[in-house]
Image (tube, rainbow, N blue to C red; front, side):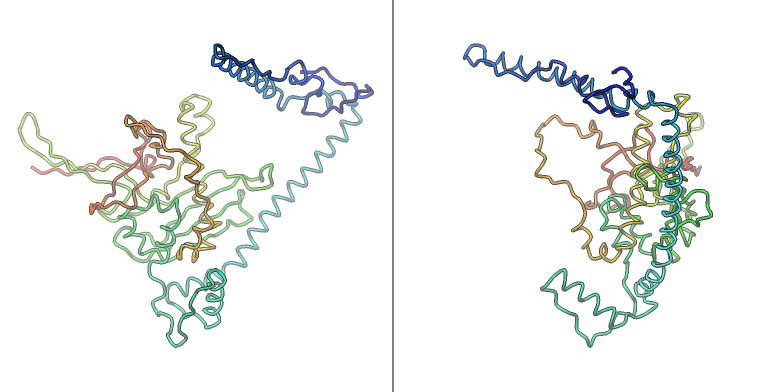
Length: 426
């Protein structure tokens, strides 16, 4: 680290608060350009390997030194007179007011969005459910949008009225078109999601301490659970982040009131047990967590400061939990920013044109007959209780095959109660 720079000292290099002057940079302190070795048949491979190793070592040394300088003070601010330091603190005070205005602006934006979008969502739901018939103007506007997207689009006949039943299985289709949700919706889930009538977003009142939003899933009566509405609330931190955006805090789910033997987040296994003393047999029915979309309503919770400080969680467990939290937050943001406002695009599949998919051409296949899929990190479940399931499964069983197992024994619904249920038969 360089020494402190006096305010009245003349230096051709302008000092900065968080950088070291260029004259002290390790690159300028004698690092020479790489030389080209002489080529000969005898020593070419050895010299190439030696030169490459030296370059890698030098690059590692430079990167290590540069990374150690990041965020360290050059001593410039500390060397300023007290009178100047007071001005610095005053500018910080102005920024505090600016941050307060950013918080107020973000909250007012949420209120404005709620006010403008609710009538449109009400109208959309009325058409989807069949509660109202679309107007000729709405149909015409939709067809003009279709022609804009596809010049070869053929307009619909004018003499055929719109269906009175609305659009069946609208939200199930839209969810299954979304890449992430399609990966966690099982065949059993689909039967329950056929009764999904609407998904709404509600922003928390500005009077709440923490801003956030609530996702509400409205269901018709079904054979799986008693709830008419399943909710999930995402809370932000009280102040916006350094970039001016809200920072995610945590999520709150809903307890699903499952009907008897209809819990889609569990699999029930019946085993026969024999008593060694009496030689009697009994059937033991045990429940175990399984893949399900409805685990979405049982979100992971961030570790407490006490857990981290006490060392109850090791680094791998903390990293795994952070990945689960990140995925949970991303699913909620996708619902808020994409799926709910653009629901018709996901229903028709148009939204897939704008999704970012990895270009498979950028990756080379690795052929290795000894590869064991269970040894790869891809087998880790990134979302609590969400084992990725194959949508192309040909099995007729109620429970689709799992491609990924639970991480470190903490599988689906690990946060939920999963005490084995038993029934005895003499």
